[in-house]
Image (cartoon, rainbow, N blue to C red; front, side, top):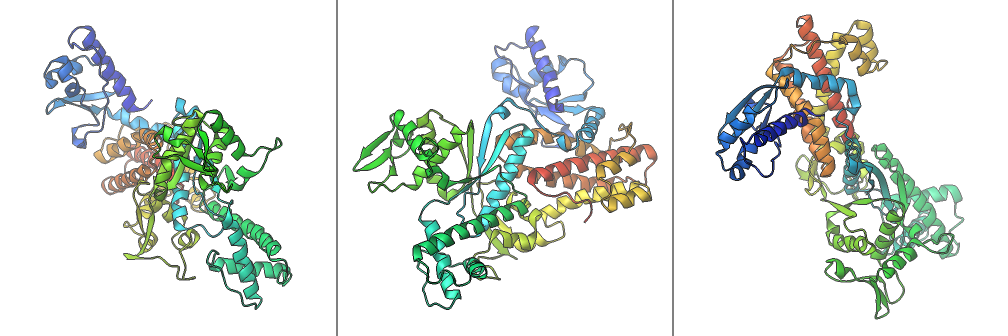
Length: 575
């Protein structure tokens, strides 16, 4: 149980005791609901319960605060309590309570802050990076990759059961257009004068696919039937681009439990029914399908959508929305209880109709949409839109190539998804404190350096060469029964307070789908460590204080590494 939760139990007991003996006349007992005071000089925790209860208790808030303080049960957690201002109750903890955070972090290591919640038993489908397999992933896809992956990591750490899914937009005319694009480039590479239709893809990557086919098949397809050639090239180009998307996302550290093909929604099962058929049938049975002017409509206006939506046009052509209907029904068929989709902000208009379809089947509230704003690329403050190498759109992989996975991930996650990201390439490459990911990673590397300096030469060399983990090294240089009581300096206490916040931070970031908060936490923790490093010597102190401070920096290392790991960012041992 977290320190805050233990304190809240103590204060809840005091409120209950005051109500029981008549000191407080309350029909409903308020919760203590502790929070961090804005000024750390006021203590470790504060409660506004007295001010919140004044009207119901018909007493002055300061009087209520004093009654609560007088009824506090005996405990070894609270060193002192002060009543301030209109009725704030400020609590200062006994140092040993904060010091226990060090022990917990060092014992749990990567499991520090891990939660278990009843809601975590729901099976959650998290879908992100919905992309056409007709070209390279762009920078916007990179933001969804970072956001989706970090969201899944944070939610799992908080106790949720999360399944990650990539939706492949491989149904429709764009796939035939892609095949035809390769066919045109194939002919051009072999000297034939043909023009690229406007509906086709003209990127240089299409030339590369055409060249690969020539290397494999020569001019075999030059005079082949155009439809057969297009279909052959379509399938090969699709396989090539999908493999590239797999490779790039894996390089980025983002892996999926499922790569789901849109086209599979239209393929019949052993009973001759497709997912499209089943979803329509289920919606029709609920009474929300009707035919008008030859088209098949979904009565989405019955669920607060602004108008009904066409699923099948009068000419028999399926709408894009029909795929959405079938896909979401398929997810629920697969046993998921809650669906989270990460979409670009330009899809805002689709939310109401998609929520309506789940409600029509009897699953209201099962769909949750996270909207993400765009990424604006800059170089030294100047907008960048084109690749220097190709003169075309900068791809996701080109950005990774230039600034690295860690910087790309961290900066893509630095803001809430509903805010645009201004990503300055040159800032991301800097090796100084102006680059936030470098600043945080450097704190971790500095701690590792302290632990190596505390070790004997053999162990330090083994750790330097990666032959010994930092956990193993820390266990060697810090006594198992280390006495933490010397840790009373304000810089030390500040680090412990911040580490104590971690579990609650993860729980709230998971609940609110707000992984970006961990970037702020990482920077705050790193800043507190750098301040500690300036104010407190470690290696040169007498043994008891040295060992206690080594334990503190080791715990800080673990929490920093865990925070970065939830963001998908590495924690280097040296830089």
